[in-house]
Image (cartoon, rainbow, N blue to C red):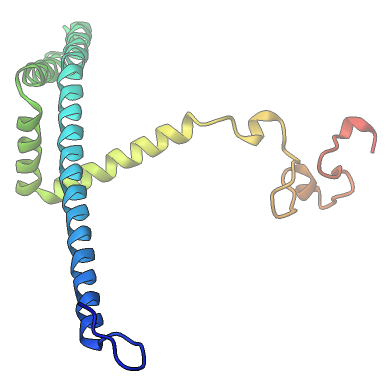
Length: 190
């Protein structure tokens, strides 16, 4: 029931009531959408975790085989040190440790590995930080060494830098006369 005022406008209390009801309905809709989004997000996270666990379980056998192959190689290498028992004992001990690791990889689940890693991190966080740093350094060196060939490897000693400078023999000789403009080579006679 709309009550009109003599000026033709509606009752202000009625308009405010409708506006409040509209906001409540909108808030309810937004809350419903948020609940659906949260539920779908949880489902997505659970599915991703399940896929990751399946992938790790599939790759676990390959990893165990690789570790066991490495152990076999280390053990075979120890045979060359038959005349040096201390060195051979070191290699044999390393091979046994690798074999034990291979067995653990085969027998443990992903969650057990995660729990073990978490326990190690809690027992000795400094060692984990150092190991993480060393691993990062080794990976960075590996990536750097396996990257595309450097300009010096391609014979571009006198190629310009991005900032317009030149490198190589032209700077050592103290003259840029012999350096061709960018894009031209000395073979073009310029």
